[in-house]
Image (cartoon, rainbow, N blue to C red; front, side, top):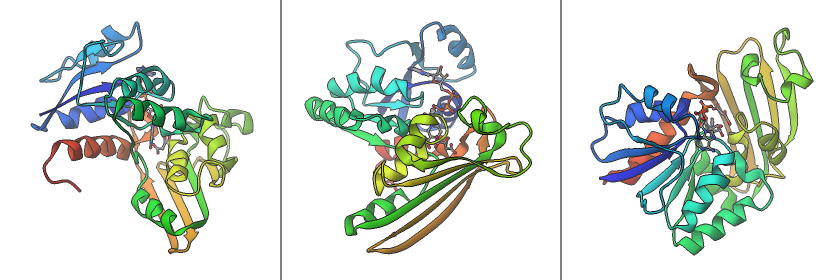
Length: 267
Ligand SMILES: NC(=O)C1=CN([C@@H]2O[C@H](COP(=O)(O)OP(=O)(O)OC[C@H]3O[C@@H](n4cnc5c(N)ncnc54)[C@H](O)[C@@H]3O)[C@@H](O)[C@H]2O)C=CC1
Ligand SMILES: O=C([O-])CC(=O)C(=O)O
């Protein structure tokens, strides 16, 4: 039985907990949430058969088998870095946090000192295995185009580029490097960071982000060229009702990753 602590209990966290309840090989026994939100989260968890404990930090004597982050960029510095130093393996979905200069190196150093590891989850995207294998032979170009419904860009710098309530055509709201995309759009461009860390790096991966008033899906398109040949992929993700910025596949990616750590046969 794998004992897991989860950071964040929002759309991804609750979605994953619902699915993980059915797995006899693992148990999420605690969730870490921001201060002053404990009571609200306890209410959200009231219907669960095995509701996890609600905490605001990992207790000093806690030693979960895995810590899984489903919270947002700030949680990496706040919870993941110190957990790695303590030797606790960490799985993260907020991969875009690694766009901050030096953070990837600090995470690696903390994991090395703790004798453990950090695993970056594919989340809403697929094909990471192919892209990272292609990198071995050498990549020439990687392009990522992220297209989401106009409403998914609310509360982001896209609001300064166009009027999201009145655009009638698909509108490019960002064009540039994956590093800049992930830093400007922390809740919408984690996939850009994941693809670039697997492939050509944060500064050489080209990114285009589109607000599309006619789309009801989060559409991720990837094109890569290199010594291996070529790769084109389009993934049409269904947004989560609880957070339309996030695709349902992200929840399944968390569940798959945790299951792969717990089960005797995994794929
Ligand atoms: N890799 C990928 O493909 C994707 C990654 N993400 C990442 O996952 C994050 C969470 O997504 P959702 O669950 O949809 O968001 P959400 O907003 O529904 O839930 C996030 C939850 O985490 C909590 N939280 C925020 N900061 C925290 C902290 N420092 N410590 C503990 N809890 C904290 C919030 O209170 C909230 O309940 C996003 O912010 C994004 O960084 C999201 C979608 C796709
Ligand atoms: O869930 C998605 O479709 C992708 C997403 O938000 C991200 O890359 O941050």
